[in-house]
Length: 387
Image (tube, rainbow, N blue to C red; front, side):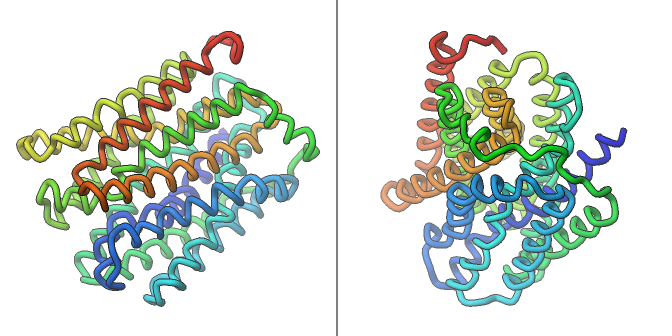
């Protein structure tokens, strides 16, 4: 029960983290209009965040791996709180971009620390369930705080109110961590050399590429969710907020299903949700010709398949490096965010050259490539285990 409490508190903090990272998705059109920049340039607020995570995350996690886990989680959330406050003041775009990048240095530290704290000492059967609880914060944020931040910005006619919501969520999460968690010193600090050895494992490197490609697929279209639904499907801002809510609700359901399925078959569960993304990409492309009910149904299916990929990707990658799970976790976050940056950037190029309605084809391409790499990793020469 105590371990579940740690997992739920980790989930609470992750809600604050994800609200800050993805809260800009729903207000990208408003930000572009305010700063008189293109939607692709506004997308840097998401991709730059992801690039910092990808480049700095593993080093930050290695450096802080021996410190008290409660303190590291609290420090991370304090930086996220600071970011929300400054961003809400409507600074110049260059400063907004800079401030957005600051918490990215600590995002992998928070997630890997929270997962390590929740899974420490549990058996293999419970490990994926504890991880699912922590990472469930991603789905919960997409259900509640991310669409709520977009809704408030629309209702009050100011994109900066979205950042106010982000700051409040981070503050509540910080208070929860400080008051709800016991001190959690690290029992044994692993040497840097022991942790770095996992980088020599071919199976781990291929799984890293799978996670990168999977996240790239996820964010080619999702990064421009509001703009896509507005321009291609003709939805009004309030309807887009409702679709974000639906997307998140279905994501929470998908995350619950994935958490149960992972304990039965890690590889098949990962492949199922990834293949689903590939199929739904074609549906998104043709969604303009669907009825309103058909479009809503498609967005629900999309959300159900999208959100669990955070969980399945991390579990798939960590399984190949159990001897240094915390470092492997941070690397999965880094590779995932590098994928987010690549997917957002590639999609931006597609949008600029061929129109936003073609973004789902990039989603399909990345998904297919990731599935191919999963097949390569399953070859006996790379992975003799059957999950």
